[in-house]
Image 1 (cartoon, rainbow, N blue to C red):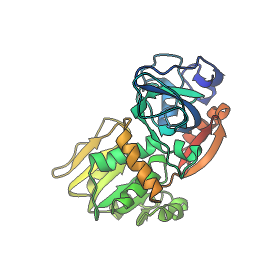
Image 2 (cartoon, rainbow, N blue to C red):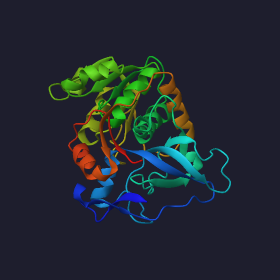
Image 3 (spheres, helix red, strand yellow):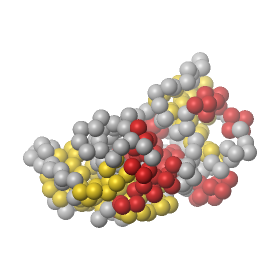
Image 4 (cartoon, rainbow, N blue to C red):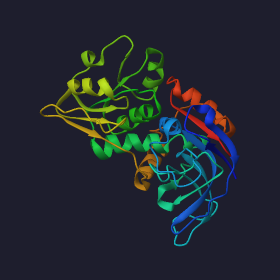
Length: 306
């Protein structure tokens, strides 16, 4: 099968399309023919160093996939060949999403939302599950709360805005002014242009902050929380020391059938829509990484495979 492998750790140029053996589904696993693969920051961070993943075979990056079940392994009753599925299999272990086929435990996938095509569906799993697990499972946001989403126009951010809004929150986002119109269309109530404003001065009395940036942004985010507020940070385990009366947590996303089903429900209700800015064929994975690493993408980048 075709796959994009990492020839050595380094820049986008180390991504090479080649032929590798097609995997076979094991006990409790399904084989999925990939139609589209989402591109995420963890993909290029892994490609650069290999440090984030335990590699157990030819290094093929990528986790977000949408496709069709080709075969099922022993003991699988959830799916049949021909079913359309999407998911973020095996994360943070190797999944090999930049390929024509992937195998993983059946419950690492969910039925693809009927209203989305494979490209749109492939844009969702990792970013949407990250937002869901951070905002809902970890912070437990409720209607009426004030939620601040940093990097609100990014892959996780634009979905977090919609999820928070669907939960009845008042949503504040940080983004460049050029992206404010898009974010208002997604439901943001208030926006801060990080290029011209200091969010720590412009925003206060926040119940939950979702931080996808880390560093000094995470540190200063503690200042905008109200007593009992919660900072949820994504970039790494170096969580800033929380002041009295507020909490700080680090979240690592994990495969989650129930979470994907909740995300599907929001999609089908018209409350969640992935923004796909760039679509490229699998063989242009290196270009996709080059674009992504510039940090200017609104929404997601997706590779077409089948």
